[in-house]
Structures are given as structure tokens and as C-alpha cells.
Image (cartoon, rainbow, N blue to C red; front, side, top):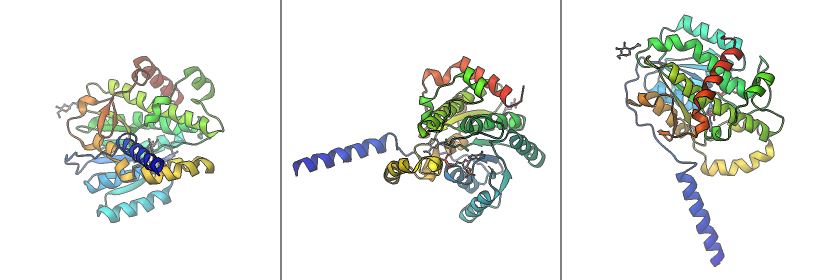
Length: 318
Ligand SMILES: NC(=O)c1ccc[n+]([C@@H]2O[C@H](COP(=O)([O-])OP(=O)(O)OC[C@H]3O[C@@H](n4cnc5c(N)ncnc54)[C@H](OP(=O)(O)O)[C@@H]3O)[C@@H](O)[C@H]2O)c1
Ligand SMILES: *[C@@H]1O[C@H](CO)[C@@H](O)[C@H](O)[C@H]1NC(C)=O
């Protein structure tokens, strides 16, 4: 009996610690007037992106859902219209796993939309495989597609009075590594068939997201555009859809008990999108609606610059 009480107390303590750390909740408190602004949200049809779109639409932002699947995007748009009463939300086709599609999206957007205030690089996946252009799918979609997209939209962002670029990274960036020789030789940052291998490739791509934001901030000095990378929390979404069944068996109970819901998972992105007075944090990494220090390798100036140059080459910009 006594042992049971001790065990129960330990479990309760573990729960409390987890809820205060890994699964901590936060809330965006920004109240800036967002009416009349335009946002692009990549992968806004589900998960954190959809929750972000819903909130911004509710604040009067014109929202463009940049998604690869028209049916899914239109279903999400209907939900968001119903929930917010907004009519200012539309789909534009974007497959980040195709550089051609990224270019077509940018051309289409620049032709049909006159302003861009928020670019939210949200789409991402944990999976095995390659993009249309032969890049490892996580490097290609999570980093390179967003890199090209951002570069193609920069001039329009600069025309806005105070545009922001927000890129979803993850705390998983801490386990990331970047091997440029292998990247140039294989068009990939680590891959393989096993889930631990594509989890490593995921971490590597999320490190790219942090370094990209670090370098972008430098390149944006002297403009009114700022940029931020985000860890949204550990959130119950479709992100684990490609992990194997036996892993789901372990993840599912923890997910039900502890993972954040997408609305809570959108708060740090929203903080970076609407909070006033964070511009001096441009280039930094945010978690729980606050700036967070990253390790030396995630703010290495030389690596960030090299990643930018290599990404320019690989995406055909230089
Ligand atoms: N969930 C977490 O705990 C967590 C933690 C840390 C960071 N994050 C980051 O948060 C971001 C959002 O993830 P989530 O958890 O909301 O995942 P999710 O529910 O799986 O949503 C991911 C979105 O990305 C889209 N996407 C995937 N590949 C694409 C492509 N080639 N072109 C265009 N869109 C594509 C998906 O579209 P389809 O529906 O068509 O596939 C979907 O809309 C990701 O960058 C992820 O790395 C999540
Ligand atoms: C940035 O914004 C300020 C005031 O909002 C404006 O005076 C300035 O011209 C802008 N700078 C650029 C480079 O657009």
C-alpha cells in the first residue's frame, strides 16, 4: 500500500514537472490592430497552421492558405469562415516539395496580391523520401522550399510598413547537424529508411530553420522587415502521421495526456506575428511566447552564411 502511494506521488510529481517544462502552455497577449494586413501561411490546412490561420482571420487579417492539397485547404477554409465570420481567406496552390511550384506560387501571388505583411513558413513534415527535384524530403520541404519562397517574396515584404517572416522550427533543432559536403554530394542532410534516421534528418532541417532566420535578420538590416524562428511546443497534430504503428502505440497515450492542442500550439507563432515591440529580437528563436537562447551551433555566423549561399545554389537563385 505504502509503495503504491509513493509511486502515485512520484507519477503526479513527474506530471507536474512535465506540464511546467516540455508541455508548458503560453498565450499570445498581442493586441495590435491587424485589420487590412495580408498573411501567407504555408501548410495552413491542418494542425498548428490551421489554428494560426483561424486566429489571424478572426483579427481581420486577409489570410492566404498556401497548401499542396486544394480539397483539404478548402475544407479548412470553410471551417475557418464558419468559426470567425471572415470572408477574407483563400487558397493558393503551393507544393514546397517542388521548386517549380514554389516559383509558380510566388509569381501568382505577386501578380494577384498587392501587399504582404506576414509570411508564416509553417509547413513541415517528418517523413522518408525525396522531393520532385531530388532533395531529401525534409531538407527540401522544411528548409529549401521555404528558403526560395521567402527570397522570392522579399521585395513585396519590404514594401509593407513592418512585415515579419516567421519560420516554424522545433526544439528538435538542438539535435541537428549540418554536413555541407554531404549536402552538396547527396542533396540531403541525412536520410534513410528507418524512423530514427528520418527523425535525425528532421532535426537537421529544423536546425536549418533557425540558422536561416539568423542569417535572414542580418540581410534585412536597414529594412522594416523582421524575422523570427519558433518552437511551438509539443503539439497533437498530424505531424507523426508517417511514424510506424508500434511507435504510435507509445506516443498516443502520452499525446492524449500531455501534448498541447493546436490552438495552444499556435500561440508562439501568433506572438511573433502580432506582439508589438519585439523587433529588436529579429533573427532570434522563440518558445512559449518568449525569446529563448539557442546553443552556439544554432547561431554560428559562418555556418548560417554558408547555408544561405548553398541554398541559393541548390534552389537555382544563384
Ligand atoms: N506538432 C509538434 O509537436 C511540433 C513540434 C515542433 C515543431 N513543429 C513544427 O510545426 C510545423 C507545423 O506542424 P504540425 O505539427 O501542425 O504538423 P501537421 O499537422 O502535419 O501539418 C503540417 C502541414 O504542412 C503541410 N505540408 C507538408 N508537406 C508539404 C508540402 N510539400 N507542400 C506544402 N505543404 C506541405 C501539410 O499539408 P498536407 O495536409 O497536405 O500534408 C500540413 O498542412 C512544422 O514545421 C513542424 O515541424 C511541430
Ligand atoms: C521604415 O519605417 C519608417 C517609419 O515607419 C519609415 O520612416 C522608413 O522610411 C521605413 N524604412 C524603409 C527602408 O522602408
